[in-house]
Length: 212
Image (cartoon, rainbow, N blue to C red):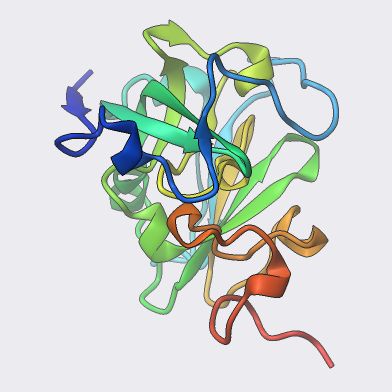
């Protein structure tokens, strides 16, 4: 199993440089999610990549099969709407998934699907950053059930509602489509450095066109 370490930018220990506007450092790792914590059933569990793949085919892996994919360590913050916490993540880089299941040329976004139908949409450019990963471990230990075990999408440069817990699928999209929280008033892009918290802040091009 290959492992690489990707750290924060130089000087990231300086809180004034790494805490986005309107946020504060939070001690510990608060639990925040919608709905119950799912039970992990390894005999039924898999991760699927679907949608507009380059060859039109879907691909899936069991949890054991995921251990054979490349893994990296990423040290990065997790940004919730009000607080900021520092973490060490270990898991599969999103770029490895893209290499194994290339998207079609016209793909612009992905939808991350989790247990109970939860979803979070991302621009393809956000999914393909070197620090976006499918995490299995946190601070050297397997993720707890409350924090997304067995697999959690981690998109460190966006607000935490884009980092879907209990990840089960990645769908390639040729046009944008809002996810669970995005349909309920949260910003479609979710850049904490621009304080993109709520949909009323969206500008033209930030989200899919509204149906009329």
